[in-house]
Image (cartoon, rainbow, N blue to C red; front, side):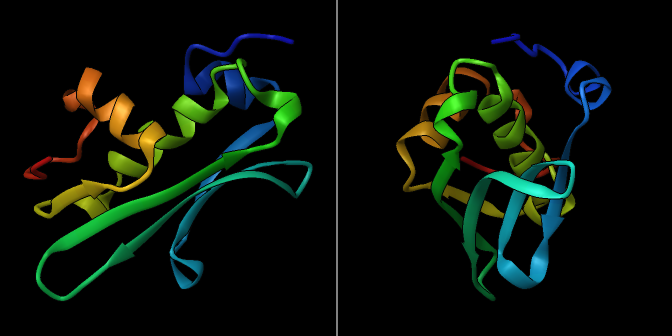
Length: 107
């Protein structure tokens, strides 16, 4: 399995990271097939909770899950919000890399 360290490497291999606001999740896709997601719940009090992350088991250890979370927590929807990570994977990444958070977000 290839290891992807940057979004550019993943994009060049055909992977995409997109926000599906109507589904309250960020998705990892390739050839239009959803291969992973980072789900969240947001409220009107400027809180957002990333509560679940999943990536196809065949892609684990590829770095794609980390890039997916980085996309999610750095997105505009996170700006100026209080961020909670009920998901252990998101919590682990933010504990090591708080710089991934969007501008004004607090973890």
